[in-house]
Length: 404
Image 1 (cartoon, helix red, strand yellow):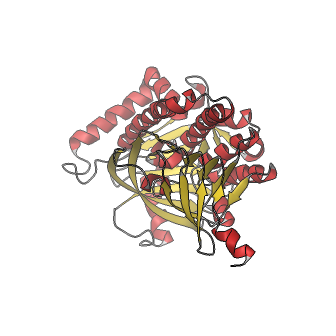
Image 2 (image 1 turned 180 degrees about the horizontal axis):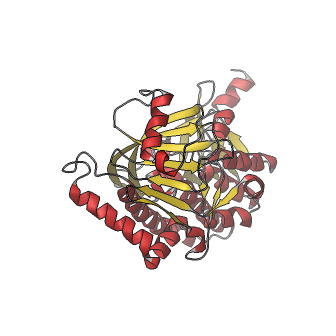
Image 3 (image 1 turned 45 degrees about the vertical axis):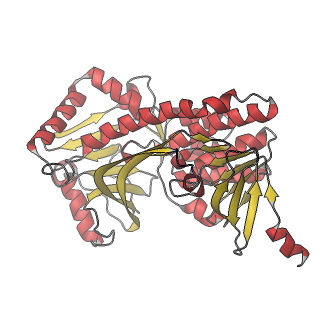
């Protein structure tokens, strides 16, 4: 065996092995590296894919504070935009909610997640952080011991084991971290019974607010991403392919559900991306299993109605980084012991509000006795009436909408 072949099959090591180069994994890697902790990020995709995969774009105030605190917010301050208004459109008309002027006066920053990931990755590499792209983590082993290992498949297909003191699973709901959980791990799962068609359109935003259209034919949503690109959503029949409708039909349906005839036309353009996804949510308890910790989508998945996922990921990464640094530099494992309970408190609060938003925006799912039943429709009208008229309800909405 040659020296290069031997190096490919030799056991690699780091004090912390981080699985996944999304917001959670990158923030965690940056903070650990800055503290002098030996860490490596293993990412199954290529660098190009990591930097171009489109995801959410709404960053909560607490997320911006975390990024500011660690010098990671230059890009979003230069290119992101503040946003503090949403508009609800119903059969009874429309009303706008200036949530940025309610509660604590907090607003979102609109900054596409792929731009944030590119910023974080560039920073991590600039400070000398180690990352292995095209390296698929297959399993985490011996997490209940003092030296867990991660079995990986290198870009050339060769198996490469990594050993660590701790493993951070930031590799999503289908990643190796979740697949490696012990039998006593509890998974809470809920299917809202709703499917969305997500659309990325090459067109300027059609309104200066997040648009939530509530219609008997299903929900439609409008979310600005950049001055040239807009995200749209259509409630979609589960099982129908994303490419089943031509662009013209989709735009016509968006016009109907967003009541363009009453409130102004939508700017049309080519669709850059279509994606279909079910609105489901789940939570793993606990988030610590020996030396294995979960963060981001590996810890919990939320329906996208309230844009909480990336914000929870950044928060969890900061909490986990602080706990790992204390454990490895001070010998204090209190933060690691409390990590799961601390993060789960945030996760369940986000799940509760996301569920409320999902019920507000959608007709009853088919599995409930008649989609759009009179009872469900009356409840939804009552919620919207209260949100339109009650200052207390509006304050509650604002606090939870921007909070994590």
